[in-house]
Image 1: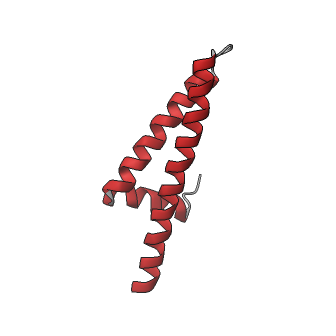
Image 2: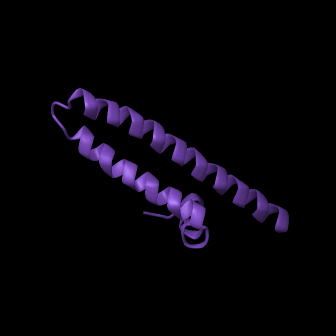
Length: 80
């Protein structure tokens, strides 16, 4: 599978930007827990609420990561 520019930018930011690295870690943590919850055959009310909350948090983190990527791309295009 070929690595896209987006993937390479994410990898670069994970290694160079502490804020992005923390957001990526959080995103992964939320994703792992969501996979656990979606594997439950009969989730209880609390688990269903947790799933909804985690989906919102995961999306918010993804949006923050996207903002950092856009900001980095904009800076890179200005300096080049």
